[in-house]
Amino acid sequence: MTHIRQYQPDRYTIIGNHLAQHRELSLTAIGVGTHILSLPEGAPVDIRTLAARFPEGRDRIAFALRELEAHGYVERVRERTPGGRVVTRTYAHNAPGGQAGAPEAGEDAPPSRVPGESPVPAESPVLAECPAPAEPDPAAGAGPRRGSARR
Image (tube, rainbow, N blue to C red; front, side, top):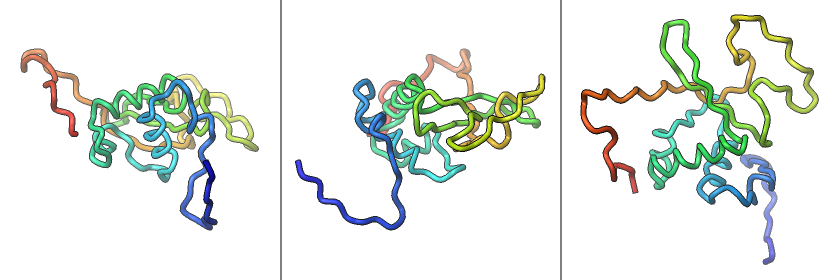
């Protein structure tokens, strides 16, 4: 193969080969991971938003996010807001195995946490804060419907 490369002065994302050529991730997970890393801070990356953007549907996107989480590219942390809502904060790591709030290259280590503080420092790079999915009501019926994923 011969690459034909064109200079791109802006609007590009640098993706490591450890993600782009990962042998244990599905192509869907690699694509979702690449897309997530290309988004600006604060962009929503929940399953519903990603399924609205791509044709894969919720099930495949949820599986891809679980793959990325298992390999250290995505970290999802459930937290309770001061108002009592439970939200999921999503952290995207450009290198696997990082931790939310861990110093990036050239940064000093964050101060140690005070007991009772939120497990995620406020200055951590959060991609999105999304409401946690509602727990199914056992009295409402037989659980999720099959075949409801978008195609």
